[in-house]
Image 1: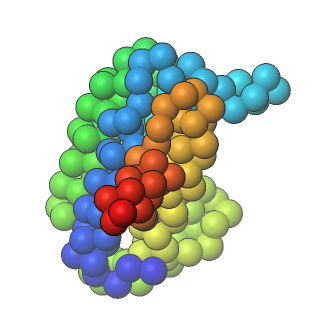
Image 2: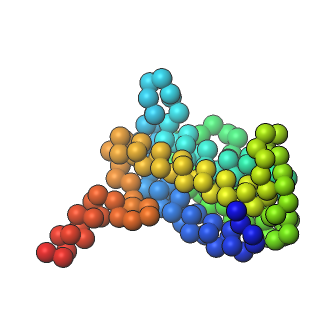
Length: 167
């Protein structure tokens, strides 16, 4: 759980950069890669979900976010998803700075009517939710023929290049 807005914002800055790294590696064609025939959610849908879920989750906790319209169909261009994510992330950080304070983070909330947590716990859930879907996206990227970037360390290709450079 986060105990200060600043602690969250520092962590969010790192996680936002990693999410953007993944989103920026998407191609327009890769957006169509689906999880499976039985689960038609696509790579593009997951990327767009990262945009909308920020407003949905934090809005459920009472944060009013003046972000981009995300309820449209999933964009067909990867650059539109990247732009939407940047705008929503900026809107989230601005809203948090203006509407919440450190004391609020320790207050309890029943998120979505059934998740017993604190406002700081909501922020933790938001970060973990982003990490979860980012991981799903890297698998779908491979299936779509796109090399996903290393996130918390180098990917296979980056590791091979590091080994090759060492001789």
